[in-house]
Amino acid sequence: MNAPLTLFIGDREIPAYTRDLSNRGVYFYLDLIDGNLVENEFEFMVDLPPEITLSSCCSIRCRGRLVRKESTLKNLTGIAAEILDYSILRDALVVTG
Image 1 (spheres, one colour):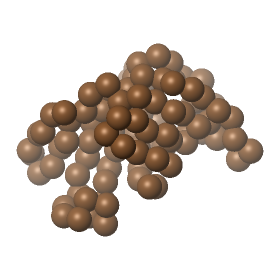
Image 2 (cartoon, helix red, strand yellow; image 1 turned 90 degrees about the horizontal axis):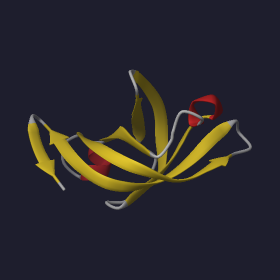
Image 3 (cartoon, helix red, strand yellow; image 1 turned 45 degrees about the horizontal axis):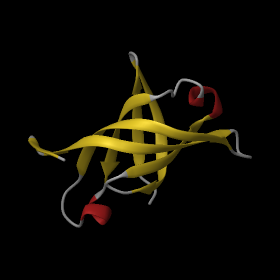
């Protein structure tokens, strides 16, 4: 699944995109330089389009833990992370998991 993802590192918002996403983990890509900023635990938000949710757009705010980093041939960093907890944000409705 390819969905936009935003990392929150300090006061920075770093764009990325998912390769795989489940309720327990995520694998995403970001620029090689920004990959150095991802350490231990971090927060991110995934924006899911209606094609994925089969209803309206929603965003999922997550707290993750780094599992591994990989450099790719396309000057990207691949990040595998465990999802520690999340909140689903949909039209001012928040559902936590």
